[in-house]
Image (tube, rainbow, N blue to C red; front, side):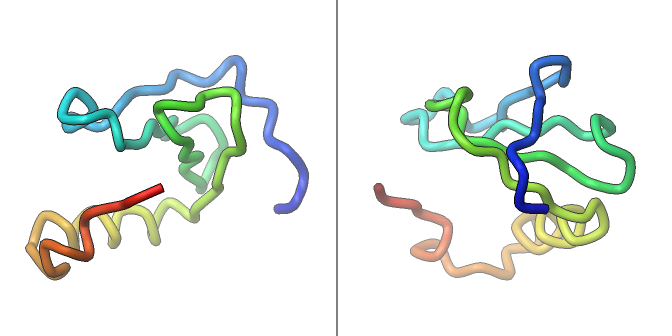
Length: 77
């Protein structure tokens, strides 16, 4: 999808790690059927990325399973 998502009615929640330096995301599962909107928790008025729900679940599962090296989990601006 290339259009901006109107997400003002979405029920956003932050990552459980958002209080650890603020470099985290917010998600709104169930807002768009079959997709998971994702945005930067520091800039909620900024762009929203849209992932297929299955892809997002697989990504979260891989993180929980430790499939990414620690340095790959760090995001720098």
